[in-house]
Length: 418
Image (cartoon, rainbow, N blue to C red; front, side):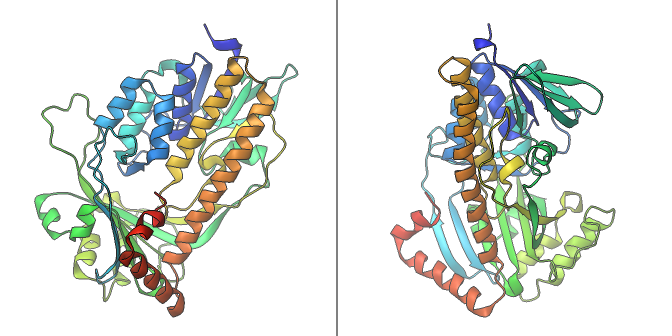
């Protein structure tokens, strides 16, 4: 029997939307998820997410215990350190990370996007409807809201949640003044299978964990390794691909990419554009780019949302990148979306249980989400600007800050926000 008859409709089957759906289903709240893709694996790549303590708390609150256990089982080896280097691999700052068991609530969970999606859809069954491209919503006269789809179908519920990503159609209709803008930074990423030869050729800091590399001319490189413990069987394992990934980013007038970043010749041209900027870089870093599988390469302009104040709360709200989309340079987007899912799950469960009314509870969720969500946006944007500074003084100041932190142990934990 469904709690108090509350009907929740979610647009988008991404990380946040699926986490929320799992929590509502666990609490017997009627929920539907409508996803534009035709299957759970459409458009997914095998890059990893790093689930933090914040994300773990949300997943624990929303997922059935057996799914959380499966997620932990499918996680990669945790990072040993976070390293900041210059483009010649000289040390600026290295922060060793504590070695905690994967079951520890504070331990990082590096997990493939593919594995995470497969686990998050388990048990939802016909809660998720695929091939549903959202086009519009309208309020009904009986305190309901109806979502309409391109195929002519519709669904009606008490609350509609846009979890449809950075290019959210729902956000555009609900908050047409909310903007997402180019930062002026463009990025290229790729990966290389972690063979024994690649392992030997990869700089040691990258094998130990996330490595952030400050280069000349405002260029920046990020690299990390995804590795797994050997196991006897794989019946419960999803996407255990071992690889080294890298991302290279710079100002658009420095990194000369094809106008059509996704065109047929784009990936190869993007690699050549990166290599052209790596004269004087350590040869091991250049080699990582040179041996990259071109089929894994993506290139994209880096965008960020512009913070907005709270709006008048209605029966339609937003979650994750649909509102507070951020740059990738802090690595907290997915964890912030999971936090949204946990907070919104608690709010809707309280409404379904008759403890509170819907609109006041949504208003509290939106107020909190706007505050911490856009704080994460600002943090991510500040890191992006610091990593891509072109001025000699700004670059020198950043490196000097890293070196000071490297010498003062108590500053290291604070630096990572741990």
